[in-house]
Image (tube, rainbow, N blue to C red; front, top):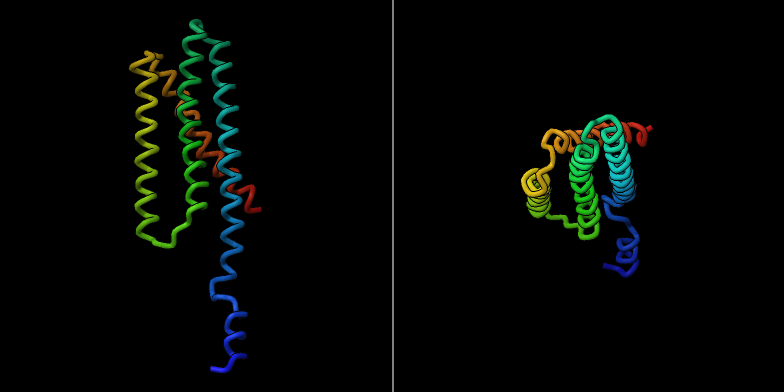
Length: 155
């Protein structure tokens, strides 16, 4: 093979080179959405705890319980954002490895939520309905916020 052909081959981009820029843009958007959702959950949890403290008779107990439930939801979102960042730093093109990591991260998040809610309910003995209300509110913000931010960034 002549020397000119080797140089020509090395200057030719790989077939999937056009996809890389698109994937990087999508990655940056997803990270921004994850961080925005995290802050949105913090703000909504604080507002919900404040409203609970304002309207309830046993204000401090219920407000702390709502705040703890919202905090569990915020920590769940922080774990998602952290794992997204770690996954992009150590990208692996092995589909089986990515699927194993996906399962591991899902189990990790589920176990952390169960553990933290268990601590709030059993160890600290906070009001169960208020803790779960705060958690559900935080998860609702996560789901609706993701939907709204995804639609907003696609326009």
